[in-house]
Length: 477
Image (cartoon, rainbow, N blue to C red):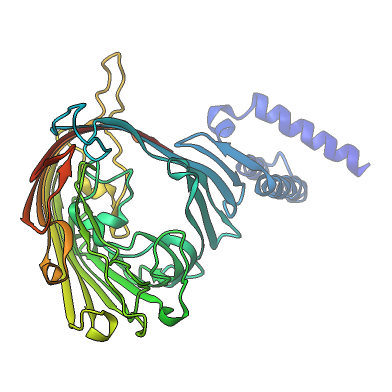
């Protein structure tokens, strides 16, 4: 009897919806409609409660089902995500296809060699996965097929608390604004001359976070041996301590149109591995990826000593951006300190390499740099209007100019080296973003070499400068 009555009530509700309540009632939710029917006397409170209870059960079942479903998104790549947003996995990758042209003399009668040769090149071809599981745990695994399928990054990040997070694996060490900005997002085709001194990606552990709005910090311990390398000598197995702190004062003040970035980096290790006839691991290569103009001389290590060298790296960084304009600069120094007991030369050495750069950039199409800054680094530019060949959109365009300096004159002349101790590079760049995932770069780079320690030979001819025109077609997701 009760069921028959309830069916009658439902029929009455349906009829009322169809005939008696107009557009406003139809636009309300089911709960609102039932409450309206109770208020008008069409339903009793008991009948309304039964309908509401059934509706609540339907909602709960629908929410439970949604949390268990996996959705697929094709925006900026392929991503699979659980309904509760706590688990996800995304396919990631990048392709940087380059062309480089140099001003060096070409002749079949020379000595040949790859340095300074005009060439096409696959600079990077990376593919991998990143994602989240159980809400707080993020991971990334990526290889670079352009480097013989070498492991690029592989880490897990534990983010129980935003101000204090932990990372383990192989990842980019926290040092330098230019280095921390992805190769997908740097303002020129290559990083500055300063980049030769930075640690890059190494195996280690790190604590990092954003303790307050606009401020970041990171403190890492690494093997100090470089990418895909582990410590190989028990005599010199000290870890490398690396740290960086940044602040965006504009963000702290709530100014969304500006970036006022300042930061500092520091690194120290008490010893680095130097086998007999080894060299300090710094090679100076031009921004056009032409010749290596500087290579530290091989050191004749005393086999009766521990061969220890203390390496200290430090740098400061700054960037000011307002609307479509940006000015950015960094200074960096690497010091090598070792006593005469480490070398057969019987002399003490205190070697310094200094490098710095300053650059200016302008977004011609008006995009704001502040929109692409987050967490102490620059992110991908998103054009106001994606390029469309029918003329409805022209993408984003920018121009930039950079000067960078490399100086290894302090002490390296005493132990000898290969090439030039100093270099000055001037870069002019034009960049076009067709959309957030596709961009093209055209750079002109002139490098002048100074303070010759030995000749740089290209095709048998001594060179003291390099001019390069480079082009990149880039796609990433």
